[in-house]
Image 1 (cartoon, helix red, strand yellow):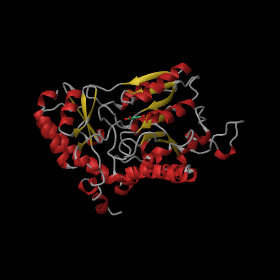
Image 2: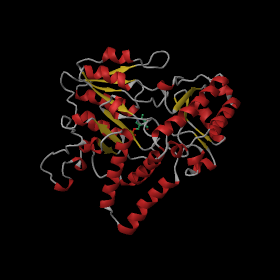
Image 3: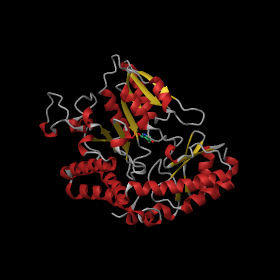
Image 4: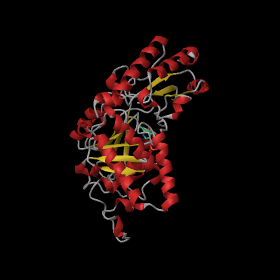
Length: 387
Ligand SMILES: Cc1ncc(COP(=O)(O)O)c(C=O)c1O
């Protein structure tokens, strides 16, 4: 598709597919992507097929593989390096179950910007002898690479370095962190839930060994479906003890007598594929692919620049850095009462969310400049709720 054609698939050009914009200014893709007519149709197709044919196993497995291939395309990867998961939590739990944390290399380093699930899974490994080390941001909110470097050594098994912070919008320098980790033989996990579908993620240059995410947010699908990419050289060496029959080398062997994980990243799949989520997941992904991530990223960068300019004019205290390379689609603004601000904006049909003392404004392919201007006007009327 030419750049011009894909540019038409952002902003006003794509909005008609998302009915919520008829009534609301939707700026909440960091929580849940907006529902499109094609994702709704896909969810209905699942029910229609069930009604008409009962179990459609062949088609379910085909949807599972279509999702795997779609994610591979998104990440510039091979489908054999992608596991289909039911959540980030499932994938990461299986990943750490494959790490021999009882020995000398028992340290898990986590950035302070990890989503709770990653921190909780890391700390759960303390029961197996792991030591968890947190890497905290400096006063500007950035986590300098040197902070990671200070704590990564020969004892480090895994470094968890999320791509974009779900609570401040900061972007971590995954590639630079990975360089330090790899020099000491440690693996790097980049939870990219807040980036996948809106920022170009190329596993050939990202630096991480494992990349995970899911379909609830910028991939425009629903809950119950995620992915985990693993560097090809890791497949044979990682033996997940948290597993299931869809991770077996031959699902149809139906053996209860052994553990024979698949030779590809499918060894990190688990049980029955998440069928109700696969239909919307594949449909949501098709929207992202049709437009193309580079066009989405450029569109969102222009909108976030406009938003940051407007917030500066309002004198708001913005938590997300101004530099384009330090942020993504999420802009977070300090508030004196973030929940009250979210409610006040909701009363004007502006949908945003909050974390701690911050308002979260998330931009995606379907947003337009008028959304930003509407939000800024509403915020200027609620200046008392901005910190
Ligand atoms: C960065 C990030 N990771 C993970 C998750 C969710 O993880 P899970 O798929 O396990 O619910 C979210 C959001 O809900 C997120 O923002």
